[in-house]
Amino acid sequence: MSPEPESELSRIGISLPQGLLDRFDEIIHLRGYSSRSEGIRDSIRAYITHYQWMADVKGERQGVITMVYDHHQRGLMQTILDIQHEYGYVIQASLHSHVTHDRCLEVILLRGEGSELKRVAERLMSQKGVESVKLTTIAVKD
Figure 1 (cartoon, rainbow, N blue to C red):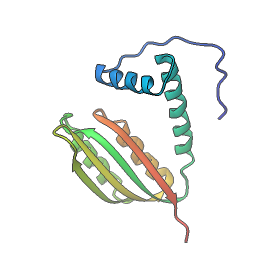
Figure 2 (cartoon, one colour):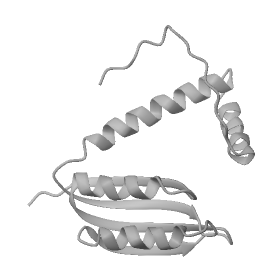
Figure 3 (cartoon, helix red, strand yellow):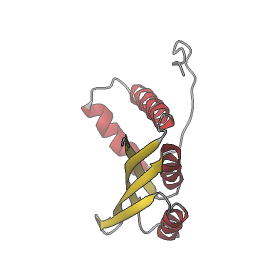
Figure 4 (cartoon, helix red, strand yellow):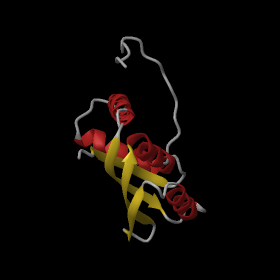
């Protein structure tokens, strides 16, 4: 997929929680962006690059998912557990840590077809209350 021409600009409006916007503004200031729009464009480019990288996860893989989420989000812990049971054939182990009163860190070890590992990560990242999900994999070679 080649990058889209960036000569034509479009205006969009988004709604964000104030805390998320405040953290984003801090980062763009620290990184020296000239505007919030520049930071958002860079973030979108990074998101697209990550998505394309994830699309290339194929073949037998060993991997780890790291996930941070709000354990007070209604029903989220049960949903995470249900997803892990649904994909038990690729999930080898998981580790749960209480980071703060509100936030948890989950580390999930996986092994299987790359597309399945990616599917688990995508299912987890689409849940309300999940702050971040990162899938890292390595090809399994005999």
